[in-house]
Length: 195
DNA sequence: GGCCGGATACCG
DNA sequence: GGTATCCGGCCA
Image (cartoon, rainbow, N blue to C red; front, side, top):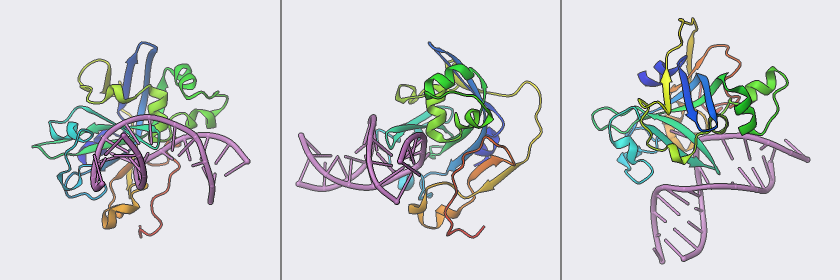
């Protein structure tokens, strides 16, 4: 939770053979582990897929969803399997490469926003796939860094996206985003949550 | 070994 | 709103 909030405003960098891409994290979601019905590690479920969450934090958890990928930062402490899903970025470095990987021209601000305003979109743009599962985020291939100068913004929280199956947990305010930022995803949380 | 469903995206 | 698309989970 704290990690999810803390990641807002930080920069995600991926150095690949094709080049370097970097984006500012503007939207994240916390998945709190065994007690969180929305989490892949709910009930302590430990499988090949969730294995990486059963260690210490600071690793990459990539999983396939609907034929695409989503990127998470493992935030586990004391063997509590938790992770933070990165839902949207603001492109900062390597815009041409992002555009190429997304197979989409960028001609205006709207196109630019469309490059990384969703969990799988940002994976495509950043060149993140299953080969980065378990990557150490302290290495220099894929990592998180602070902006060089302090940026001022307000973080707000909402329920998470597309977790209707999670019972009451679907409404917990575990999604964080930068207030009024145009690069956050368009997705809406369940309308059955009163917020 | 096969089926199914999902923390999605895109197009019409 | 319908469909494409990739993997892991889970059951046979």
